[in-house]
Length: 369
Image 1 (cartoon, one colour):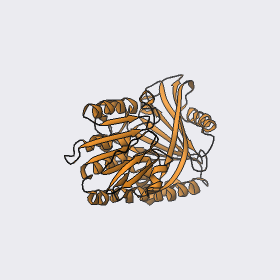
Image 2 (cartoon, one colour; image 1 turned 45 degrees about the vertical axis):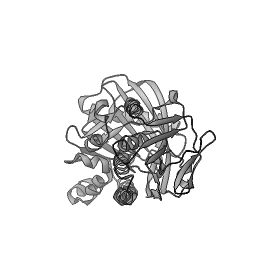
Image 3 (cartoon, one colour; image 1 turned 90 degrees about the vertical axis):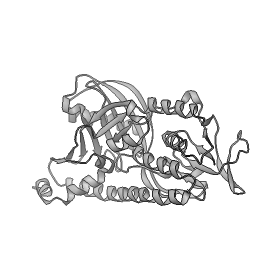
Image 4 (cartoon, one colour; image 1 turned 120 degrees about the vertical axis):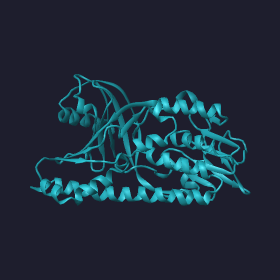
């Protein structure tokens, strides 16, 4: 089989790695519209659970930090602290990891065609060809669409998803004083910085951190607000903004990811966790399914359907829980709830944890009194 991958982000790279292990695959060709010198770009915080880390090839070589706590706050005054076991959450150096994977796949024979702007996929007999200005008529048995947002090619071939895009921006910041030990191990999330958006604070060391926001409009203005929020919350001052970068942060879920022998993965079909917008969890699962089953797409479609249902449930539950928290906390004084979380895998399903919180009467009583 000859396989084409459209897009060389992390979803395309991981899919190509898994395809290399499939004896039914003869060639893998990646089409990437950016030129090599502009890749990979800095755009993601790179947070994953212990389980997701284990599913991403070579990711353990690029661990930057680990975390034990997630503090989720609303601007109305509710704080929920999730206490995980040590070594439950990791931060990966995404840029270094992707560079390493590019070298691996190149050494193993994957053809990467940079500067190739694919505009469509066309069926040609019982095979496919990708369409673009400078692309020759190469034929492929299967095409994997791993483009970013907006998903123009995905939609044109009949792939379907619910997309709720936010504008994301992050800043690497230098702090004026050292963080406390517990603060270094804590990921902070603010819900409600605008009607649908959120903000985050990710420590990198005792004097460095990443502050980011994902909002509907004017993210740069909300970034300034987020910095002030976290300065007040954590009792620190941001001394210098070292770097600013960003991209689209998606909420949503996939609906149809296989159309005949065209597959979608990653942002192309909204494979994301709806609270954080993170895609590594879903990509780590789908890329392996595709790689192992590219020669038997019926099985691939059946296996990935379980992931689709989970992501849809996350999205629906996120909407429900988010609305409920805002309604309830709006009538209360400031409250802080601490929950012990035994399973690190629940970092990949934040919403499941919040649902458990809402189901516990003794915690709700403490919340309302």
